Image (cartoon, rainbow, N blue to C red; front, side, top):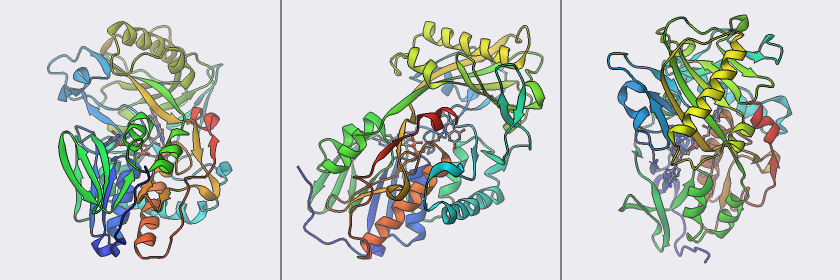
Length: 416
Ligand SMILES: Cc1cc2nc3c(=O)[nH]c(=O)nc-3n(C[C@H](O)[C@H](O)[C@H](O)COP(=O)(O)OP(=O)(O)OC[C@H]3O[C@@H](n4cnc5c(N)ncnc54)[C@H](O)[C@@H]3O)c2cc1C
């Protein structure tokens, strides 16, 4: 049933907005809403360790890796020291590829560049060394990719944290799975982890996949639900590995390389290139095809599955490095990201965010901002904040995005 609210929206100073999802898009939206003078902003996120979503970083020493429900880890010897990994997104760039077809590209890129500069100044973000990122072709030839490529200095999660820095009064509620949103006369009433989480004028859905569909289905926002059901996602296996002994090196001095033509490995990233320390640690990301043909229930990865995936990815890393043998593994962890990358996305004129005026439900995320990237997710968060403030000010009254076309971006996602 369609949700309707009897009272007009309050002005922005008195407006309350709940953001369900604390990834890049949700954090970007929260910061922009506060910067635009919205009275109350709360971000709910499932993350046990804080915000970030697919900007996910782990210290093996925390014990969080072997204990994680959705993965399988082995062998952190006591006294090894902290092994720092990014286990999804590895780095980001500051400009959309030229073929994005996004009319708003010019001005938004300038804003994103400004945001990167602020995060760099605060020390949360740094650029990878020039020439560190490239492609290794099937015949083993390395080719540099033009940068700059940025990473979070304390792990990619610190990029999301940096977005919230300096914005007073954002309520961040970590480790909270919002499982119900109910329309009442007073606004959207949220529940999560068995508790009431407050009532808000507007609810922003800043996550996707089954979780979002389950939340939206009974909520009273049928058009947003229908929009979300059109999203298609692909999976990625990620193995985090630390080696004993001699450092593993890639051809051409690359520290992060996309592969071309290997059966399982899409991207190998030397974590030492970001965090230093000489720990000989790597993140190995699979292709979407490999993840599709090696799909298992994400919540119940067996040790046998994890071992097989690890062996496949290590074999491809060996081939990529052009060596006969890799050094022995001292630590490993395998995780399947079941909903890793969007296969279709809202693009062009309709892109940016969605807003369903009658339901008072908005949405942001990488796939709504044009496709899988930190930049698209960030821009989507900015766009949703502007749309909401426009609505509260009585300027924008039309729906945004929800009827827009979702364009296949499979090739672009695979090249990420
Ligand atoms: C393996 C991998 C590698 C990648 N590599 C790159 C790269 O090199 N460069 C690049 O630019 N991009 C890369 N990306 C893409 C980039 O990480 C994403 O585009 C971006 O982080 C998406 O941000 P988001 O805010 O849209 O979504 P998410 O990061 O998915 O955030 C959604 C958040 O909502 C939370 N959530 C879900 N349901 C609920 C609920 N019911 N209640 C509360 N919280 C909830 C989730 O836990 C999550 O924290 C990669 C992604 C993956 C998975």
